[in-house]
Length: 588
Image 1 (cartoon, helix red, strand yellow):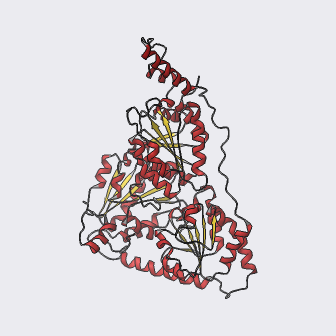
Image 2 (cartoon, rainbow, N blue to C red):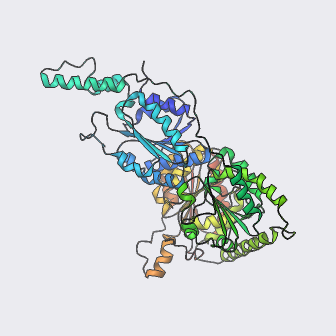
């Protein structure tokens, strides 16, 4: 018997190594979900299609490969657009399978029938609408290849509902089954003939075999000449700085090798995005603070998967007298706002690995600088770090009516270990966490990326726990951003995903309010209530804990860890005081 389209899609997902798919149910896509479950793929159903796409994004970043979200037609697809755009800008490989109305009903007023391709086209690398059953598997193969080729990103495949259900069922639904009465009259007979022709074409030679082998996109090697040029610039530098971004860890299987390479380069390094934790918490080459001051004094700056966008003040943080080197998968990001002296379009992690040997050779053959080498420069940057840490300690000691966020993170950081994975979703509270929490290993920090999207938290946490079941997931939530995906606590309860979420509850969109009040004299639209988020969590079946005093922090967090180990999610409602730690942080 010909396998249904749903079965063929599920077989293709198995062939591509998919172990989890994230979804919200719908009649258009039900055959995919049922067939996937039957084949051992874990189907995790979320409470919002955005969260399904965010979860697929997180899973792909942490495990490698391609994350998969499956959503129903119309509003199911449109609900994912923010998450898909976020994946595009974060350069995260993701396949979105979207349901659609039947092939013969397109444009005739069917339920949830819209032009989905026009809406998704600006936000994906590749998209296609499948028109015949035999084209389903090839379309999925192309999607998986495209998602990883070149600059990774999301891909959309539209799967009409009449391709997914069994052929006999589809013929019955169209009134073309064996028990249908023969039509009378010329018009009905012509209609039946047209339907018959359409269905025959739809299902002709429809049982396409699954792919025999999966070929990963090839990585273009970097020339020896280019590596030597990069090495020569770094070897001659007295004050080099290396910035490493998320692109350097896009291949999780190679992350350990990338970390060894970055350490071997011996260049002062600042990590951002998913690259946080690449060198652990306290490597001698790792700097965490005062990056802008370091760049201003640098004579050579190497950007590894980092663009000169707003985070570097559009390149103005790097002085014109400094030699700018850049490695990036994306040709636009490679030259955005600043043209580098040497630009390499390639995978940054692989280039850093390949750069170690030529840099050693250049250093060995170069005229010696002062006997201490880069140590004076490193000492200067470490002094900057120490000064900032002392400032944080001073600010953490400041008393207030509620808990000081810096004091809280100073107590949370020692609890983190190699299993701890931090998910960041929010503004002021989360940005404060980025200054004070230190991931202990690579791929232990998840933030939305350059789009700055609020609402990633619930989906990211679901995807992270599904991808890394042994990890201790800490979801750092702002009280504003948590409302976007708080209902995913229900998803965690139903699927036994024991995450720990901490809501920084200051009753405000603080990052906006701080600057808005000073600049415009009005807090309009920035004020929230100090809600009982722990009670909301209990309503979803999770464990809710209230933290009102800093001295109770060790006991409350220990209880949160204990409960989460049992597979039950936890929410800690942390009553925060106001803080000016990040004053002046608004971006244009």
